[in-house]
Structure formats: C-alpha cells, structure tokens
Amino acid sequence: MKEILKYVKSNKKEYLEELKEYLRIPSISTLESNKKDIEKCSKFVATKLKDAGMEKIEIFPTDGHPLVYAEWMKAPGKPTVLVYGHYDVQPVDPLELWSNDPFEPVIKGGKIYARGADDNKGQNFVHIKSVEAYLKTKGELPVNVKFLIEGEEEIGSANLEKFIKNNKKLLKCDTVLISDTSMYAPGIPTINYGLRGLTYMEIEVTGPNRDLHSGSFGGGIANPINELAKIISKLQDKNGKITIPEFYKDVKVLTKKERESYKQLNFSDSALMKEYGVKELQGEKGYSTLERFSGRPTLDCNGIVGGFTGEGAKTVLPSKASAKISMRLVPNQKPEVIAKLFTKYVKSLAPKSVKINVIAHHGGLPIVMSLDDKAIEAASRAVSKAFGKETVYTREGGSIPIVVEFSKQLKAPVVLMGLGLETDNIHSPNEHFPLKNFELGILSSIYFLDEFSK
Ligand code: BES
Ligand code: MN
Image 1 (cartoon, rainbow, N blue to C red):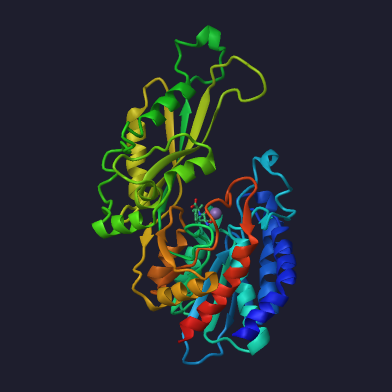
Image 2: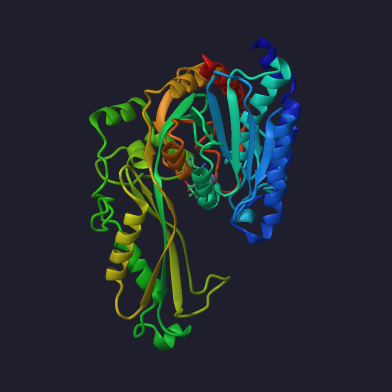
C-alpha cells in the first residue's frame, strides 16, 4: 500500500495536468454544436483508461453520445467493481459571471476552476488514477474492475438505460461505484445513501396571436406573462406545500429513525444563510433544512422567459411566455405519475383567455439504499481512512436517474462515494473542485479496491 500511495504523491502534478487537459474539452452534451467535442472527450477518456493499464477499451456508439467501456478482469475469485461516471458537462451560461474561461482551467486557492471540475470530470478521473497507481506499482488490482463513462448524464442518460438492458452480462458486477455527489462538509468523509428523483416540465402560455402595444391592449387582452405568473404562484401554498392534487400520495414518510439521523448531522442554518447571502430560509413547514434538501419533494422554477428582456424599457404585451419547472421526488413517487398530475392541475388553473401547452422533459426515479451492505461498509472504511475522520451518511438532494437502473438491472448495490462539495458551484458559473478532494479521492478509491477485496 505504501508504494501505491508514494506513487500517487510523486505523480500528483502530472495527474493535475492531465485533469486540466480533460477539462479543456467543452463536452457539453445538450448542444448540437459541441458534438465533435463530445467525441473528442470520449476518445480522451478511452486513452486515459488505456494508459492506466485497463484492457478491452471500447467506445460504444449510441443513438446519442458514445459510451466508454474498459475492464481489468484478472482477479479470479475476487469481486467486480463497476465504476460509473460521466464525461459530459452542463452549458456554461451565463458566461459573463465566470472569472475565467470555463474551458481553460485555473488553479486558485487550492481549487481547480472549470466547467466539469466537480461534475463530473474531476470526480471520475479520481478512479482512473487510482487504478493507474495500483497497476503501475503492483502490476495487478486486488479486485476486478470495469469502467463505464457516459456522455449523456446531464441530458437524462436515455441511451445508457437501453445499453444497460442489452448488456447485462458485460456489465455484470458486485457493486457499482459512483463519485458524482457531495460530501456533507469539507473534510468530512461521506457516503450518500439516497438520491432524489426528478420530473422536469415546461409550461407554454400563448395569448394574442402577435405582440401588442401594452398601452392600447393592456388590461383588456390577457397577458401570458401575468397568467403564467399566477399559475406558478398557485403551485405552492403559504406553508410550502405543493398544491398539485395527489402530489404527496405516494410519498414515503420519513421515519423517526431517519429524522433522528438528519438531526445528528447538526446542520447549521445560519452558516448556510451566510454562505449564500440570504436573510431567511423557507420551505415546507414542519421539516428541517436538511430534510427539505433531500428527504422531501420540492418544486422549483428553473427558467422563465417572455416579452421584452433587452436593455432599457420597451412597452409590449407579449404573445407568449414560458417556464421550466422541476420537481424533485422522493420514494415512492413516480416521475410519469407526477408529470400527469402536474399537467392536469396546470391546465385546470389556466383561464380561457390564454392557450396552454404543458411539455414533459426527462425525469428519473428516486432511490434510498440500505446501508447494510458489504460494498457500502468497505467504502465507508475507505473514505474514513483517506480523510482521517469518521464517515457520515447523507441523502443527496440531486438526481442521478441511471442509479436506479444499475440497481434494478444489474442487481448490484450502488456506492455513492461523494467527493464534491455543495459549494463547488456545479451547473453554475465558477464551478470548481478542491485539489484536496482530488488527492484524497484517489486515496479513497485505492483503499476501496483494497477493502472490497477482503
Ligand atoms: N452530479 C449531479 C447530481 C448531483 C446534484 C449530486 C447535486 C449532488 C448534488 C448530476 O450530474 C446532475 O446534475 N443530475 C441532474 C439530473 C439530470 C437528469 C439532468 C440533476 O440533479 O439536476
Ligand atoms: Mn450535473
């Protein structure tokens, strides 16, 4: 073990340079214009896996973006770990709020700044480098390892879902190891045991057949922005409850034990308010902040457009307005059911004076895992050893819809070894990843392979 750790230490600089190279590829999955970069990024990942000593490297084309696979299966009788991650990233806008070019990584104050630094290039690179360190020093791994790094996580993983169904044998494993979540706090080793699900909707409101002068027509013809705002305002009540009929019908209530474990994390509301510059917190009445963040369902408007948004003032009564709305789900809510309930309710709220169109985008199921599992125990020991503290267990508020498919199709437990921080600005300007987490993440991964082989 000493040898491997020494190897990591002496190659730290080189690893960081390689991570920078990874981060320079603008692999934004949602933009058609970046298709070439996506391809380039899949090749980059394949090359890095090969350099690490992995075998049977394969880039699988899909109807969307390619999947990268690799394996090292020379530990007969030992368990198999499937490492999952994603090389695609979110768009960078608003670009003007970045302090550096999002695809020209900068190291500042012990952090590396770039789109994808945390979500997810920095976190999946950790595992590639851990395997490399192992193989370069020992010539072998203590367990069998497979890698599956996809390019469509940020757009719903639709093609990966099909791939898993059709390639169960190829992907057969004893556990799926994923680092695409967050630690509870800086320096606190964390295993996440839950993810929320997601239903993503869009509401389009159309009023008059063209934009009108708000002086000549305002007050007499319905304004789509006004009507949309009224609809949105009716989706939650003053107690922070979502008002969609039957929305909570399938929600599994938090048990006493769960609520107790939330309490034990001693979360500080005031530190949170300070960090994000808000004077008060809000949310569903009767629940703590941490419960609201991960144990209860929520509804948020993610974007709203309509009318004149340019510089200065222009009077107009617009023809159209629209909003994108996400709902985070908890067990046992189902994304399609929620999409239907949402559509029905929103339509019922619309006045006859406007036309309304409701669109369902991608969604995903929520999951809560059992902590009573060998892989999770091994991961817990591993992160604790690397970070030198006792491991804590948290439920994550974000979503990784493919996790449910791994668990269902491969029937293997999933380990969420969160290495990011909540303050890393994922999906936002100035995304970053602490170098400390990168380094200790590599150690965590090395220890995990070792612990899981026992
Ligand atoms: N890495 C995130 C999941 C995540 C979010 C972990 C927040 C920890 C905190 C993942 O890449 C992601 O962004 N997922 C999307 C869902 C997807 C279907 C677009 C999300 O949660 O919005
Ligand atoms: Mn993401």
